[in-house]
Image (cartoon, rainbow, N blue to C red):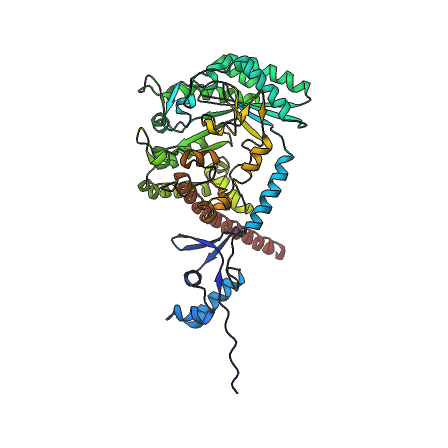
Length: 502
């Protein structure tokens, strides 16, 4: 009687994303945040298993006329690095999601609101093409915050920050320096109230810099207010994005740059913090190499790039990023990556790659883009209304309460804890989900009316497309830097060994 051959087990691939560049092939193991270098045959084996899981013998047949032993070698290597296995990949289960939400809610309940973003005015002196606040007024009356409202906002912060020994107040707008008298009044008032509550208070401000002068600069530095300048890069790019409301031909760059330079000169002498927030529109991404080099000239490590997002890709001035721009953008990003690798000292200040490289190195696993809206941080309108953050101000339906009566924080947290990648049909299928954590919930709301990214949002948000390009190039850069470091270490060991022998 003939004995039956044991049935071969099917091979299943892990969840992966492929990045190729000239002779380099990388497989990004999504669930384990690993980069694995492949050869061409290993990639073909992996792709065949992805098309339809199969036993090794079947994979050999499908890859004919490739030599059988070569296919087996490639399969063995993929098994060794856990890219092929005998069990199909399964995503996170609903039970695991529920447990994740339960733990996150319990964690948030232990925290306090320690920071408020105070919109001290809804007036602005610029007319930026991409302004989500509709020229700073957020679609409502362009008013200043009153002193009594500002004082109540401080009292609200003292109460909501509870037993925390610190809190933070950020001046925002509109353009906050349009209401500089209130800022000057509120800083000592808030310090006095914080001292009474045995807290240390920190201050921040985001400004376009138009109204900076010696008086304001000296005050901001003396009071140790952390400054973020909304500035979009070289003149030809900045001026296209950020125009004056009345004189649209006047260069805002020519006015602002000398003032920011004066602030920086004084800030460096006084060890005061400053950073930049650059919003990228079409001119910015097509000239990203110039933008990155521009910001590298500053000493600050705080350079944050944001992407201008337009509903349905329509910009009033034709500055929206189109599909045709992405190929050119990738080439420019490659140039930035090459420069990054050559000049490591300057590259420390380049947030285009330093953040992604850190995420790759540390195997980051983010489940959401931000946990703070309405939980650790809130935005307050000039009238005293509370919103999840400064980006939600203006969406009346997202109002949480006001600074006199407060808000039901427990109810909001129970809702917000469900804002994560697994509750978005788009993000849960995306290869970059754990590095990204999904889009900002306010951006999701702006684009699709939901706190998570909706399938109804088409085309794919440019945030997503550009972030994928940067991470793919960062992964190639990380691999090159790792190989260079490994080679340098090996050469050093050989030199030391020869030195010992001599």
